[in-house]
Figure 1 (cartoon, rainbow over the protein chains, first blue to last red):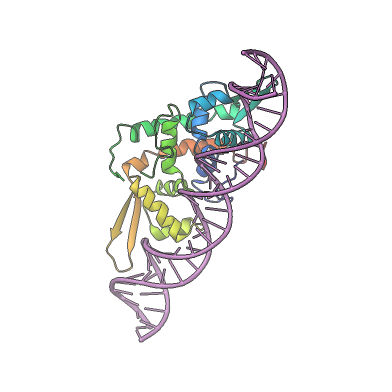
Figure 2 (cartoon, rainbow over the protein chains, first blue to last red):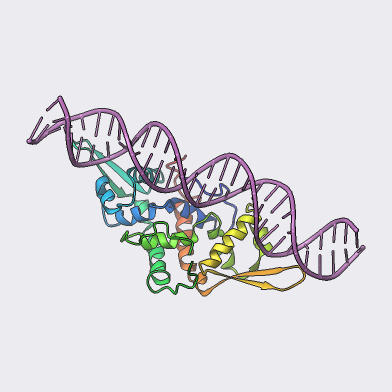
Length: 119
Length: 119
DNA sequence: GCCAATAGTGCCGGAAAGGATACCGTCGTG
DNA sequence: CACGACGGTATCCTTTCCGGCACTATTGGC
């Protein structure tokens, strides 16, 4: 587990919200998970799909997701190394959560959103 | 808007996920929103409900939420100042998202979760 | 005149997150 | 023999986040 952001789980409401957020928070995890929802991908494929991420960051985020039990990492002992990443069952169960986030964003931010608080 | 974490919205899937996350991410926002879902609260009430948050942080997070159009800040010109915080319509629309997060956490983390990746 | 309550603001410093860059090991190819 | 593909590591540095603490303004009460 990455680490709950307030170690203590006593903030009655919002606590579990934060706990879940802690798992998918991290600048690229949402994107990675979204890609993996479409199927298994190997490292280089992920990289190609996310040009803005450095190798270090990608590795890093993948390791955290793995540690949190959200994705599986399968190493194929081949000549040019090949590593496949796929969602675990637990990872798949995040689909609804990610969908909720995406849907909200599409409605309230993307294109349709009124830029009321234009910075 | 706080600032989209990857300025560019071209990460096809996951993009809106990240955009939404950017709004509710911030160590205390999830908690604050969860509290406000239960009704309007004044500054000091929020403080009492979240003992671990410093005044500075609370103010800060509230300001960001306000800038993102998720909460309303109502100042009552009274002798001991009184400021009420409540969710905007937009803020209320996050309820489903927060519920999804909380629900997932309750099922997959809280108490029932198998601590497979114990740190 | 002094204290208290409410809602902040300002500064300072440490910790963590994120980014850039370079290097590693293996094997097939030219 | 050097080179490239693949999947990383290691190192360093910058930026951001966050916590602690002190200080402010207003007005009523003692």
